[in-house]
Image: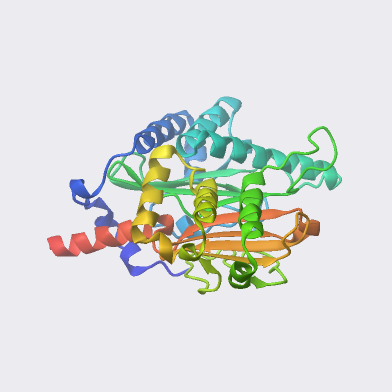
Length: 347
């Protein structure tokens, strides 16, 4: 992978943005403190697996599929399995500093579904609730650093600079099964909101609105952006926010909040404010596939700066992928570019 030029100069990361341009996040301080406590508990060998430079290519090497647990193609980072029980508690504590109560609960439930799949797939060795990987990029609490929690169906990426969480994307949640249909947890729908709120919106549209919003009768097999390192707008098809009535607009905002309020409230509030500042009327909702529960379906919510993308088509439309992307801000790219520019202005 080719790293953008502005990421190649580590010295640029030491240049702070003007203090007035950033408001500190309580979450950023909590992340740094939790990361430091975790690191203090690790052995040198464990640290060697977990720690990277912020500019390392591994920073953008993310994916949500099951990957080999050893050899070629394995994920980078330190797994929960390679931690002592006390260290796992500290790792979960770090994860909790990034996510809202609902987001944290959802993340734990997603990881727990690996046990359900292990049982459904005759004890498949690729299913393991402890094979989630934690990586830290840079020094926690420094001018700019980041970290990642990743494994099958869960990818959380955070960038922190000048006391502020400046990026919380790519942010990927998924659920297989979408609904647990047997066993003691039958009826569990980990990502129910992502499906139900969107379906309520599309079903509320009149015929003229549906003609705009429903752009195809067949849903794609998966989210179109997959695990690309950088993504852009997917096209302007769909119905614009301004073409919705007041109740539908409220519904669309609720759907956006389902995704963005997965992260801590202070971070989510800033993200939502930034989206609103770019113009709600520029946001477009598009749906492909059937409108009834159980039909394979796909939708996206797209604005000038962001994309929310969802697909539920696999395994008889009982396998959900849902991602939040930022066109310029994934992995903190926009902030790091400003660091780079500030460095050269200073020279």
